[in-house]
Length: 257
Ligand SMILES: [Zn+2]
Ligand SMILES: [Zn+2]
Image 1 (cartoon, rainbow, N blue to C red):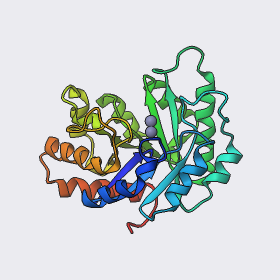
Image 2 (cartoon, protein in one colour):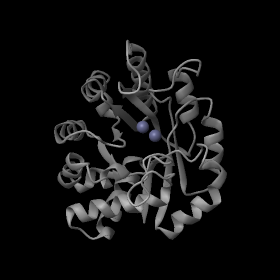
Image 3 (cartoon, rainbow, N blue to C red):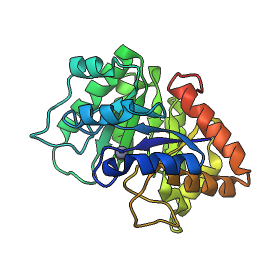
């Protein structure tokens, strides 16, 4: 069985279709999925979805792209919302210098707040980094994020950044991007990192893997991400499924159900 370690089942296009998405998971040997938080405003509705099915987990956080007038995260709020058996992580959090430019000190402050909350509650971090890898690693180090660990989700960086993330004790999660023909460097990362530090995800509804590229993504499609990694590493799909699922439950500190 596989785990989709990062998706957004509460987003329009998915939330309306929950029963069929859960059925498709079953049919594609996807046993569990983790829904990442993006805003505090949407968190209660997302948690309702997650609570409705034993296969779903949640993370709480404010995405680095979330701008005013959305609520800012403070440590107290994150800790209160994280104090729930369904909430297994803090995130998604991190830095994104691709979509937003200018003085992004507020992003780094928000990221620091999430790292501090994660350290206080002992739940790992789900890291989003885009066009900002060196600052992401720097802030993580400055805040002692290695003491709580987590995952670099939807990894699109090179082998050197992967090595630095692994050195900090973080896991690396691959999305459908690894199935894209032109993702040559990313395929090399997927071949080279230790199997016991790797997760798979969809980031649904975005980034559908080949052969669904351009369509609405869903957790069931994580099978195609795992198949691509199995092909790249010349391993049976079962080996990749077993490793990434064990990694997920080890990272999020849960016994495999
Ligand atoms: Zn993200
Ligand atoms: Zn996401």
